[in-house]
Amino acid sequence: LDTLVAAHALLNTEEFSEYLDRILKSGNAVSDIYLCPDPDLLWKAAGQNNRSWKKSLKRDFCSYLDSCPDITFSVLLPYPYIGYWLEMDADRLDATLDLYHSLINELAAYPNTRIFFPGSQDWLTINPGNYADTFFDTNVFITESMLLHVFCDGDYAITPENEKDYWHNLRETIRREQASPTRHADLSNWCLVFFGDSVLGNYPGSFSIPGFVTGLSDAATFNFAVSGTSASNSRNGNRPDFPCAVDDFLAKNTTPSGDGTRFTPENASETDLAGKKLCFLISYGFNDYFDGAPVENPRDPYDIHSFKGGLRTCISRLQEAFPHAAYILMTPTHTSAFHYGTDSNNEYGDRFSDYINAVREIAEETGSFLIDNYSGSVITEENLDSYLADGIHPNETGRLAIACRIIDFMENNLCPVQTFLSAWTAAQDPGQ
Image (cartoon, rainbow, N blue to C red; front, top):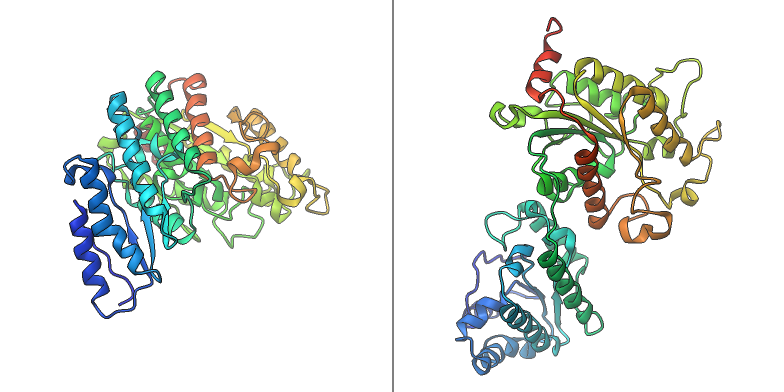
């Protein structure tokens, strides 16, 4: 037996003791035990009495840490939605945070124990889309990601050196939300269709950029972004670049080329989409630069093997099919790759800034809106490490920042357009 999973919320330390006894007496070799205790539940089980609390922890939990020094105990503390903390008055908030602190102090005394707390991360706790039925139940995407990041990569580990920072950050978030709750525009009457590369397509669910947009604004989002793709068809159809993605979209193809799309309009019912306004958001440029695709073919402005030609061709096709939709082009952010984009990537001498300028020019030429993530974003060349995971792809904080910018931009700039269903119907019937 390699792994044993107990899908039961342990309500008291006696249950911990029972589980651990059975595991340790099973005869199987045990190297790691992963636990997700809720300090508040354990406190209530101890009669909300500090002496009973410490005694039960020592007897039913810490004794195993002491007697099993060769087993690593990894403890993941709860990371509830911010609403959980906001419902508490000041006294209860202090008491609950003291519980967390007390449990950490008890466990940290044992060298074979690792403690993790992601609950001070804004990107996680302020997005209601990350949670399911209760303040504590994250959706499947967040749960899977959290277990991998915590138990495999060691992220969000609490140490004596950083514990104060964790609680300070959480308290500051709570104070900020109490004084001025996070509010975003209500985009529930919008349907947003995303095309792009791995910046949009690498991450599933509620912590992708489209997922953050949905969670914070209630917009319906469909993500056609595919990792590794470009606006140009520079590899002659060997991957689902923008021209192929548009072919699939206009054909209502649910099994498109290459890696495929993540969502299609067929995934939602007519009731879900009825009356919604349609907006396309398009974000390419990184892979065109990395692959050395020419920025433009001066002899053929619609050459899809060039960056501007691919953008120009695909946007024109979408505008012909959906003339009343809104269109937003987004530039890439800064990058540290290839000496911060200053390296020339092809025989034409194109640099990253040339692709950025090309997006700006195509937006103006096609009458599209522009979100300039290169020069107008909180993500700058100086703070890349805070927002990008690898110098290219945004981390959770970066994805949240980009999503918030999309929401704010739409609130401030977009006017009513034709509904999604009527636009979609018109695209299928040229006679309309």
